[in-house]
Image (cartoon, rainbow, N blue to C red):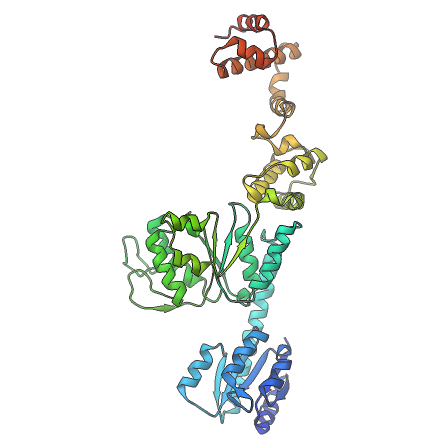
Length: 462
């Protein structure tokens, strides 16, 4: 990677010494004497040497601005004021390191090389993560106005390190939205850790979240770090927060206020550097009214709320999503070329999708695996849900699956055999539904009552 360094120091002799020391090791160095002039070009450099005292301001304040204009750059503070409080404040505000004037040239080289090594590792990690993302199922596919609005909102909130609440029905893709926020934030090089509050028993979720010390409870044979620790430097996604126990909500509130926590069985306070994103499929205001969710915690989460629309309100997204899932299924399960028929596409577009995107993905995946044909039909998609297909689709699906067994029957009168069996089953079902009322059953079947009576005698239906 290019070793581009910006020096912001009003002492030109210091800049000259640094340049002469670092240019031989391949560094491209420029200098500025004021904060204002430095901030104009700060986005072009990956390492900045920043003086603490400058003619137009304080280096700590300049550091905060640099973190906004170029959050990926590393900043080394350089100062003649070797006070411990200054060093602590600089590191607290995100400085990579701290050098005291007059500094040793060899020490400077070591710190700079270490910084570029860190930048190189970050770049490599980003490339690996990008490659993983490209091959992962985390892509968001959308054309609808509702989802394009969500994309714009993601772009606005991602760079700002604020808490976000994502609301929407189950299966709408709330975790994908959370991942998109993380992947477009300054924390993208850090981990994304998800925890589903509804999937973990209430008596275990506190330990899972905060961690525990050895011997803190029965079965704690070793220390557990917890999900907050695992998310250090990155994003912690708390899914289904409405399911959190009310007592745990109080502890979570304290953590969100102070970004401090203690493991179960410990008194040591741990400082956490994580971004919190929450999600819910419930109306939290109703949960507050019923006493199931703390109002103060709601306002901690609800700094910014993104509402993900259900799939039934995103008709333009259905076919692009379905084709994406089909392509993924073909690739993952090595199925060979498959596509949707026009009738299948019509079915997909008109279906209400109570299970949202998750239901669509599962339906397409199941149809792709089970269908032997290259063209997926409506009946392939509706297999197992016959309320979503026609009587013809239902019968064709059933008969196709049983055809091999039927064709092996000794009787060659296949037509009469199938018709009589379907007729017998149909009459039996309708009579059962009407409680044996033959008049009502005949009306539903659309036949004469006397004809129904003959069928009952013929098929010996009790």
